[in-house]
View 1 (cartoon, rainbow, N blue to C red):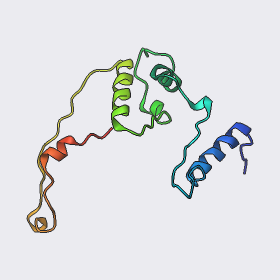
View 2 (cartoon, rainbow, N blue to C red):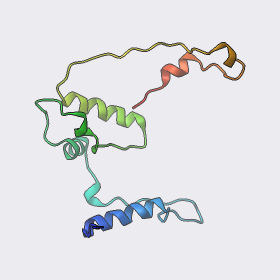
View 3 (cartoon, rainbow, N blue to C red):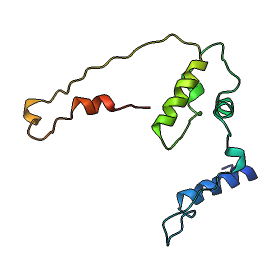
Length: 128
């Protein structure tokens, strides 16, 4: 078995383990902070997009595999929706609209065990 001995990779791995083990949290107060290494920080959206997707605009839309290792994480969905909208404008593609039905189908034998979810709630869901 071959293990990667790259010191930067080891440092990054240890950083992830510290976060996962909760070693950045004070056990007495339950508070803490996660130090983010300087080389992992972006000062603005354009730098973030450039670091993930390279120079833009692209002349063609890359295949889905291109996006598999390019993931944005943020504490709020609204932040990701804003960034996704901006990023999608950088890739040429035809616009399409997906539609759905706003009803629930509950089989008669299951009506006693299921509560109906309001359509307003269903329409408020946004899978980012």
